[in-house]
Length: 342
Image 1 (cartoon, rainbow, N blue to C red):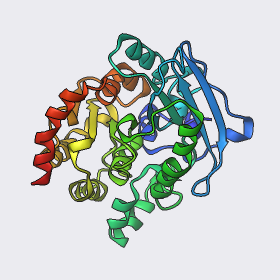
Image 2 (image 1 turned 45 degrees about the vertical axis):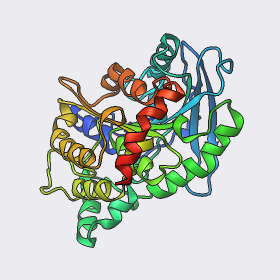
Image 3 (image 1 turned 180 degrees about the horizontal axis):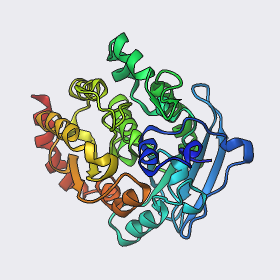
């Protein structure tokens, strides 16, 4: 039972909203977890990965064709893992087709060889993915108002956000296990994170909280309204304001990191333009330019796995482009470091 399984009978507009806000109930493990089928490469599934920080997680590791001949591989951690590879097992019969795109990019030399670690979501996705420190910066009244929000009679938050615990699971438990079991490069400049919608929020938050672990993040259709429903807008939006304040004050230097944002112009994505432009201005004023920063708009694209699949090559190429020769990288890095020092 994948994301939003409790609401399959809702209208299309309601289902689109839930694609951002996540499931309000899930029982995937009760009936067993399906292993995604991929036409290229191989999936190694780790069911119920144990954690002292969060509930057990299902993790799918995609290995490209020829693995491990091109070791060491870069690693791309992706959220909403059950939606990444196989449309036959997803609630809406859509997927990112991530294996197909990754294999094509690797084979063509547009990216370095990499593996994908897909972490499945669960019934607490909303609380797991909402950036915790921006949440804590809200006033008690703002938090109570968010907790009071309902969609089709269901509470959007079951518990307070705990994305800090989720990121501890990722960095202290899952990542060491991946580094130990698979032929990957553990260094920061080979470790990246990607997500969409609420997962887009968590991706930039992971980069901000763990700049020594992640060399870059890609955030597709980032759900800047947080817990605000588009048909019931809150202005000014407290979640968006909290996110922008956090990014302004706590984002790492661009010298050794990359960040990618994008969004479409239809369904939920139609609301993302103004807050994304605010974030773009904040980052550019902090020195995020050139190969370190990209923000794109895809006219006509909606909020769906099919839309993310159609443009997945863009963020993958941005994060995982082949390394420049050492002497070239050294020459280009000096101005950036000097600018950061000022």
